[in-house]
Length: 508
Ligand SMILES: NC(=O)c1ccc[n+]([C@@H]2O[C@H](COP(=O)([O-])OP(=O)(O)OC[C@H]3O[C@@H](n4cnc5c(N)ncnc54)[C@H](OP(=O)(O)O)[C@@H]3O)[C@@H](O)[C@H]2O)c1
Picture (cartoon, rainbow, N blue to C red):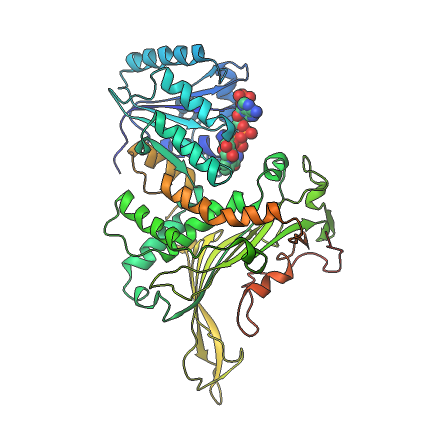
């Protein structure tokens, strides 16, 4: 792969968690693979008063603690750190931005680095508009002599109105093609592999429609709770944090029509069309189509686990959902009548993200099935962990008669020798450097996704009587979510068993 053009990467909020856990390990990994530009500088910015030396020490620790792979020789790490510096900034002080501009110009000419700049907003989202405005006022977003790109992290707004406002503000300052909205799920190998699985193989696409598919199920489960992000999470909840972005993007890639090319807009246009075809959920339909839950205290493998309301920085009376399951339809020729079921939650029994395509049963049942007359055919795309694809189908059990047994054809990425699965941030940062926005959410996609979840937000806000169901930490969420799935005895797929003691009290 060719190296990107020389550039400077400026990270706002560089003293934070995201920079240490994700960004620095990803950039370091790009250096190890010789994929950073020939000349590259990283400038960290924050309100914290620290020297560049201290910042470099923090980044060295980040590499050791979070890169998850063997750290290079000391010499190579030092070479990497030598291109990193830190500056204190008050995010609302225009003078600081002018000084930053002068500093960047000096670095560009000293290093003969050209004038390409990437600004990464690793700050709380409430600062995005302020920082972008001040960068523009200081002339730092004008693309006269090099590119100027701005990366922002979700959440892209809080609801439809604030999502549109954020887009409008940014568009007054910079053009859409300068904005890279990170949805780190799109950086995952297996999410991208969905496109290859669907459009590189002739065997799946003919079946990928309402004639052969009974339902589609997407799960993104986390086993951890809110950890130290209680304050952020309590004002967000699972619908905003996971459904509006990651889960709907996965629905988009699963349901989209074949794009005419691999061009960024060709793919994003098709995802947008899926979002535009969502059958709107009316406010009155929310209780029947969307289940919300909140984890309660339990004991997992003998250890007491606090309920959500007892987590640090969470309101003791909080009605924030830590679990959402919903059912909806896509009104187009491919998917008319096929239910889509999506669910996500914290403190579920395991960490897993998977897309399950349930195929229809055969029209006539010749054989005695252990599972009755249901289809034994599922295609399971495992996004994380243990990335891979599993096809379930029925086989004859050896011996007398024609007893049918459901078996697995299972591909694991890890079985490919010498193949390293890059981290999502590695792929996405490289793409920004290359100017490829295929794996980033576009303004209209984000707004359509907000529009879809808006009635749910409204219903929950306006009707406090809509129940929030408790579920003991370590279980698969409120049992009532099974009622969403239509069909005799059908339920969600459970990749593993509940972990918690089921007898624990879970009424909210
Ligand atoms: N951490 C993750 O894994 C993750 C995952 C997905 C999305 N995100 C998103 O990425 C962004 C950064 O995440 P993060 O976890 O690194 O955030 P963070 O640690 O809370 O904040 C990053 C930095 O922003 C500055 N900051 C924090 N609160 C501030 C405030 N009230 N006013 C001004 N500056 C403040 C601080 O630096 P100074 O005090 O030095 O200025 C802090 O070190 C957020 O938008 C988050 O939603 C993070």
